[in-house]
Image (tube, rainbow, N blue to C red; front, top):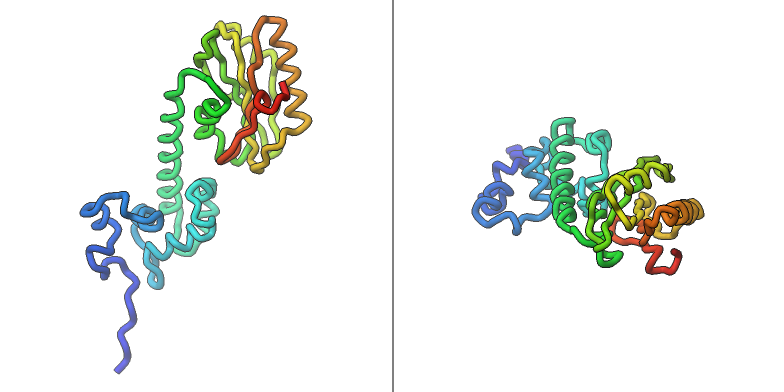
Length: 232
């Protein structure tokens, strides 16, 4: 007698092992990353369950959700069993998570250290595949008046318009500036261009009695502070 082929469908699992039922009855915290992603994609293929497919996807990024969030729709679709709809669902869920962290960061209203700048901006910049240059504008109590992107560039650099930075500072009544940009490469070492734009903004700001208090280089998990390292 021919042996009946094994089914890979989650429908055939016990309720304790099914991700959706497990979440409902035991809570979301008990689910693994792969099980959570399996809920998003809903189904696998004839030869692979949704959980196994999710494990395979996670393994490709060393089980790092931050790295998974950097994958494009096209890169996600390269996995057998992931079509456009599933890829979009995964990307959307991870973007919601990123924005949730960003919402927490925006609660920071006063800067008292370089780490508070990192906490404010890392959710916005830390995982980007390209460079962005941001300015944090402060009043005389170091409270944040505004924090926003000044320019956006490619993988290796971005341009900064000193006149626009100072124009916005005057409009806001800011007396202090903190410069920040991300390094998609993950390196924390400032480039010569980073040092030059810092000095250029520092000198231009002094003429208007505005101080450049720091320049922060942000990566996914770490940061470099010009002020902390005595480079200002």
